[in-house]
Image 1 (cartoon, rainbow, N blue to C red):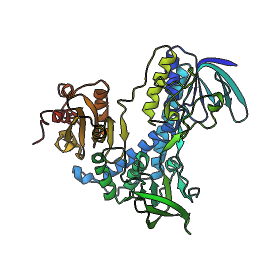
Image 2 (tube, helix red, strand yellow):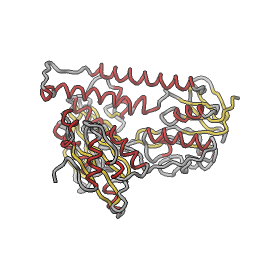
Image 3 (cartoon, rainbow, N blue to C red):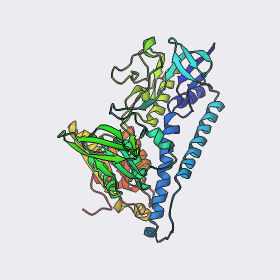
Length: 469
């Protein structure tokens, strides 16, 4: 039986980072994966979605060529080729991860990993079985789509995000259940391609965890693109039409009154994800799981109640973000190697690839008010930013949240061009307790989009320089 210093179960953005980092720290590392390296994020989530979204952005820009004093005729797209481009990007990245694992001396095993005891893992392949032992084990088994117990949810017209990404032909119409991050990104993407999209959301607002001012532009753009949006709505049943499509029945949540039923060719279930710990054997060896979700309980060192066993990523519940899983991997390995490192969630950026993009980090304005934290809010619209105007995309704004007494930046958000890239500067400021003055004292290149962050920092104090009172 092979023995290792660290064995990692799951090769997603948490697991493969843990394996590479552990090997670079001198540990003998095993990585177990039942499917492809990169996990859901790389193969069936973050990367393929963004590849398709980028193509739709190009298509939209071509349609708007006259805005840039250009002309184009017979503008069209080939969805099958869009999917092929997406697949090429994913394949290239998977091969890159495989090379990194090999070059760093990580031993990889294909199969389903399962605890036998606190130091032994059984790896089940199609026609064989292997066992290995490890001094330390990291569970990184990720998550799976949440399924709602709606009558008709088992019908062939219902799909999850993975099936939606695998389509090679676009449906004429699509109903999306859930207006969270996944639902909103898919709605933006498919609406750009001319699909008749209907969004159904149980809560009263889309992207309900964000401040309302951050979501208004996205909601307005969806409606302008023809998306039919029903918030405060609960789907009660779905049935197959004579043509093989879906007839969706729903009601108003507040009144309980039934609403007119909706027809769609396909239904996308986008109501979130839940930790995937089933079949791991964690509970059988005494690892503590959270009762309702099945998530593996961990402390801020990423340890389970069995101290040499760690868990990272979506399987721990909480913030189900690829970059959180990767950072948790670093924290776990550092602790395994004897360097105490605690996980800090104070400055975790959130990036949403809608139209326009939205990104946020740290304390929101609503959270500050709810917790009676005295704040100053600085804002600057991209309409006052030269680079945004040159790009032809000046919608949106930057918002910074600073403590009223100390001027320390507690959070911030960006809606508009490059939002998912710009949030990194704000994240760095929040992570290191910088003040708005620290940002304004930093020279920002001109003309660039980050100048809007500097202007919002000025607005926290004396007022933005390039904005009239």
